[in-house]
Image 1: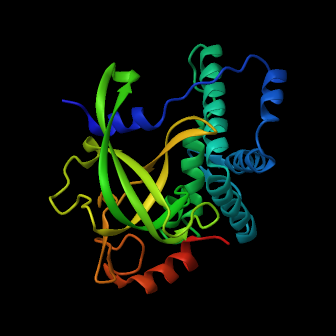
Image 2: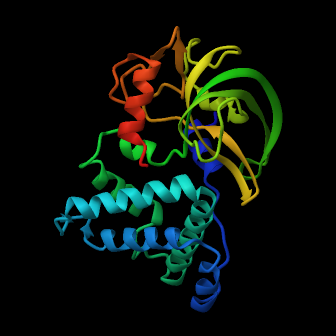
Length: 275
C-alpha cells in the first residue's frame, strides 16, 4: 500500500541543483530578485536566535515580526517560481554540507528553519495566517469540466492519472494582479490526495467553491501547472458556496462554518491579504 502522505511529499518537493563553489553561488544569486535574497537573509538572521533546547533567545519587536511576515508574503505571492528554485538551491547546499561533514547535521534544513519561523509568526497572527501565507492565490471558482492526463512519477517509476479541473474564476480574494474575473484556469490534483474523503468532499461540475491555488510541477519560470492547495483542516480544499453561503467545516479561517460570500470575501481580504 502506498503511503499517500509520503507520496504527496515526494511528488510536491523534488530538490536538486548544482552549486560548485562560493563564487558560482554568488553568480547564481544574481538571477534571483533582491526580495528573495533579502527574505532568506532575514530568515537566517531570525533563526540564529533560536535554540532547540532554549527556544527563542531574543524578544523581537512586533515591527520586526511584521516586516518578516510581509517579506514572506511577498516572495510567495510575487516571486513564487523564483522562491521555489532558490529554496531548492538552499536545500542542495544543505545536503552538500551534510555530506562534506561525514553526514553529521550541523545546521538545520532550510524547510525546518522556515517551519520554526512560521511557528513564531503564528504567535502574532491568526492561526490560519501562516498556512495561507504559503498560498499565492485564493479564488471563488465554478467547475466547468474535468480532463485527465498521465504523469510519470520518476521517484516511484510509474505513471499516475492526473485530474485537470478546468474552472472559471468568479471572484478573486488573492491574485488580482495576475488573474481577472471570468478567466479560465486548469487546476490539477491526484485522486490519491482525496484518500479518506467522504462523498461530499469532491468537486462537482457546475458547482461553485472557494479554492486555494498553488503551483505544481515547476520545470522553469515559464513551464508549470497549478494545483489545488489542501490546508491542514482535512477538508480536501472543498469549500462549497451554496446559495451564496460559503461552507468551511471546522472553521479553519475564523469566519464560522457558514458565512455569506460577500462577508467571507471582505473578512479574508482584511485578515489574510497584505496590500
